[in-house]
Image 1 (spheres, helix red, strand yellow):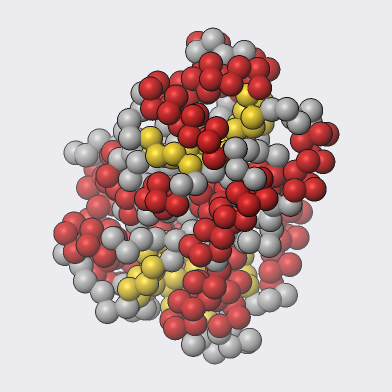
Image 2 (cartoon, rainbow, N blue to C red):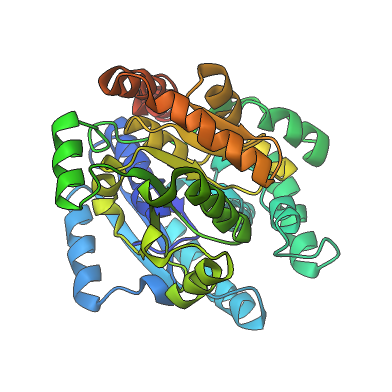
Length: 403
């Protein structure tokens, strides 16, 4: 029986596994022979550390479906990481040979680099899922230097894995042109699959909206929500500039639900520095299983991705989740196809510049949108989610690849 090795670069409890990987693994599970095995690799970070009992419980749950979880410790780039990767490579080579792995299915470029090395060493076909630029993105957002060894290494591996992959599943159609220009790579099997959303889980209802708003004393508020990181590929100080302008616009009616793992003291410093009232912003870290309840209470959302060139080829799962909950979105320009969709469909505001004047215009646009009948507005926006972020798209792609 031919089996599949799925590679990721994230912790099992990370939302990128829970919402960005596992749902697709479960779709793949349905497309292959019932007796075939799927082995899923995760790299655990300290922040998402699981107890031994939690890990064993998850392993047992997935093993019932012939999905076998594997974890190694994550390390930041450096000597320790290189040694650990050598050990990981040897372990995975043994697994590929022992378990008759017929396909390596890697998620994104970092795991794709690992998949490329394994593919070369074991002559196993490689599939790259959620194909997007990573090395240049890290330079553009200020995390790496372009002349650094880590950039040169990953960019070189991106070129190699692009030419090696049997199939590529990109997040945007435009990534095909990027790969041709940057990597000199062309593909016989190229698919496009933006970040999909569980439309049954993310499901807005007016009754629950009103009940939760009443419970949290938000009935007369304009509630803005952001769920995600601050810094890295996301804006940071500019987010609080927006909140300051929004508070000037709406006054005490504004309530911000900031769902982030950012240190609360650092958030408090930004709030103080921008002279935003403390009770305007609630900061908390929420397990992704509960996040839809907070989305349910919101009037609009923001997605502050840094508007760097490589983000044109990436897709943020946040937009799909916001749309599924019927939320207008304030977004930066040239983010995936999402900025264009938001502009053309009139379901939010696209920030052309990161200025106070643009933030004011965004607030005014949100006012106009929220003047619509609530039920009609939510139905309109959720229809966008069904059109662009339904798992039916993934079903068709995996059917073609694995049938």
